Image (cartoon, rainbow, N blue to C red; front, side, top):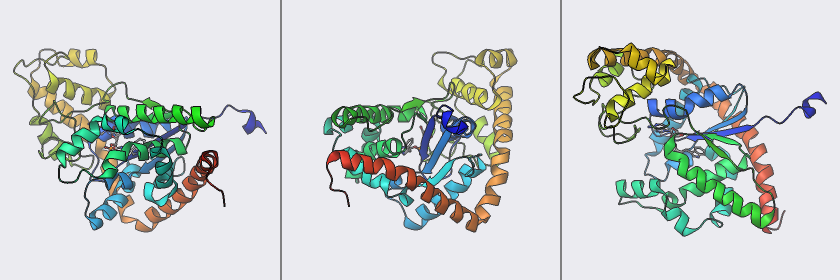
Length: 336
Ligand code: TYM
């Protein structure tokens, strides 16, 4: 009884593609918040393997990558006892809902998505329909669970806005079907940039091996990458215009130490970039240490990972099915 009277806990949902080891950008931009939010919210996190198919994948690599992604999330503190944790393709309601939503999404809206434009340019030989309708699947992921907040990095903000537009449109046509989700971006680090080219985002598929720090990189590799990071000729640790490389390192340092930009400037006043990079490299390596240590243990326990998948899928499906049935009924599909 008492439980029923308590206000409903807000619902959080987010996903990540299993296309390689997660980067520090993924961690700071998204997973760090996922972990923190488990305390105060009802959270659902999943591995977006269907989204990964919009780019050609090797089957064996994708399968192994999906289990690895699960172990990585758990090593980052995502706890299947606190949160719904599942693999997207294990919950068929996502693909089904995606069709219903794509019938309410306009060609013009999808054509404006910058990720579609970027990925089409990067994979000019495979501009498939899935790449185009990618945001409708993402909207399905979010709306099925009636999510209030979606913790993501800045690159997903446009997809979130489209999700809201679809939800508003369908709520208008059919009555209140969906909660309107809001993007939840980190205060600092919504866009971590490549260390090799700070005009670009840090990405799992960065062709430059020094551009991205991966969450499983050993300390010496992290230090080496940070030392090679592009900066400028000013030799002054300060946040400002035209200092993309230094701004990026400061953002990373702020995210892993909890310090403000002013505190960081004061800490390194009178020091060159050598000292600063050493401190950033060490702080990142230390920050990721527990993740590296826990990852190996989770990955070696395949039976446990499979059990997490199975239980996660069943629990997620139970939630997703409720929304899907409601939508199908309102759309006029004959119910069995
Ligand atoms: P993905 O796998 O590309 O990235 C996972 C999360 O990491 C964030 N991110 C970054 N944040 C800051 N700086 C960076 N350099 C950086 N790189 C990545 C992303 O913004 C994302 O939050 N389409 C999504 C997965 C997805 C999803 C969803 C997310 C599918 N369905 C529903 C939220 C809700 C994607 O490809 O993320």
